[in-house]
Image (cartoon, rainbow, N blue to C red):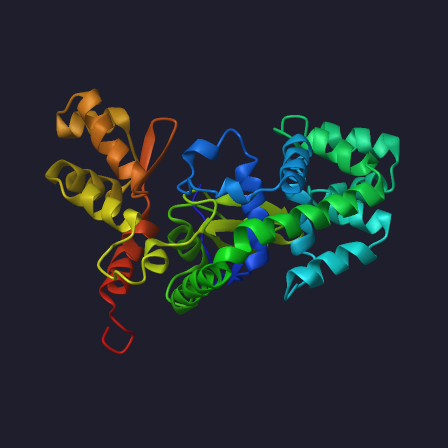
Length: 348
């Protein structure tokens, strides 16, 4: 059926903002070191464990057992904390219900009544809330733990693990970390008005595609070094959060000739006649694997190799053996190159 459009309203999307804080770096470091499934994939290999005293090791074991790094991040999003002392004092003055409510994950507006009841220790609400996320890796046990743990025990643990980690890991390189996060923040702020929100999120995160959702009107981006190369996602009311890895440009500021890995990957993916032909065919329209095989007169295994390279560079996307061009990636490539070359807005 044909549809005639008489309205001029644009498709709605979200607004993006970038924030940075050494306290997020602190909490994400605790999360990273206690994530056994990902620890070997992290770029950071030297955690200076010789600085870890028995008190810190004890608190980290508690984090591993109960995933309390999630509570640290939830609390950090609740307010703005200029210093570690402000953060720990905030925790200290919270009453039990509020502390637990903030620490419990946000699971959508419909489940907020259950979240509030669970924070007050209501058994039925705890059970129902846990059932809603039964397929999640750790939320069911985390919800039960937060809802039932002794308030003073939780308070003391959250204060201690942040304080001990900050002293052992953050403090020795505090100024360097602050400068790194600030550099990345400034670079993102310069770019935020040059790209559409969805394209900016994809560019800043190194390839994360996040399409608008009905209940999400804001995306919050927070740079980190400790969890590189991973993006970490979280949900807040009305807001999607991406803790994203700082770029190579920010990390290697003293060597402006080191390009970001994603920039290299994108141009390398296009440096082949077959892959350029694929890009043009997919620019025209989405195509199935069978279509592409027929058009290019090429074996599926060879074609898969080329498509894999384009997908790894975020130039091509796929679903159910249908391939499409990610035009946002193509649009952002000249901007990526300009930033690497150091071309200013005036020069451009």
